[in-house]
Each structure stands twice: as structure tokens, then as C-alpha cells.
Length: 136
Image (cartoon, rainbow, N blue to C red; front, side):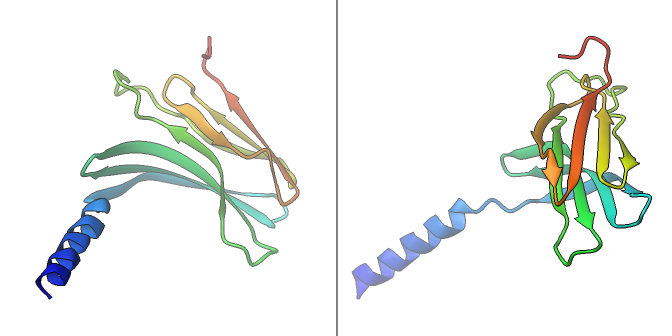
């Protein structure tokens, strides 16, 4: 009985210790862009997450097709945790619907790094362009 109790205590500590709760998650900025025919919505959000062992500043672009019942899907993610990044550096993210089936996303590559991109989602072509001069 004593060994079983000790085992359960150790197991509980290990399970609880593996999870790192987020102490603070703050949405800093959001923007939305609708396609001209209203069938799609692109939403961008910049989130700052702080917690035990976590310090993350990133921006995501999610795409939602209003004609389907699916949840929004992330189509681009930008990491903004660069060491030495000047406070004045802005991602300057913009979402422009060229046509109802083509979304162009532009950003300043000096203020963030594109780490994830989807090029085609439910019939929508997605392009991402770095507008900084001398881009990396």
C-alpha cells in the first residue's frame, strides 16, 4: 500500500511538472480584411506570451472561408523575438485581396521572420512578400 501511494505521488508530480502554464498572454494588435465578395476573412493578430520558460512575440494570419463551416486556419506566422530588435521596428503587416481567390500579405522582414506559410487554402492562393529593402 505504501509503495502504491508513493508511486501515485511521484506520478502526480511528474504529470503536473510537465505542463507549463502560461502566466500572461496579451493580444497587442489585430486587423481584419474581407474579400470583395465577402466569402473569406483574413485576420491578423500579434500576441505576446510570457510564462515559465516562455517569452514569445509572434504574429499570425488566419483565414476563414465564410461559405464553409470550418474554423479559421493559420496561413502565415511571423516570429518577432529577434534579439536586439529596435523598438521602432514594426512588422507593418498588410493583407490585400487582389481578387476573391488571391490574398497578398506583405511585411517588413527587418522586424520579423516568416516561419510558416500556406500557399493554397480552400481555393485561395496566398502570397507573402517581404517589403524591407535588402531583405534577408
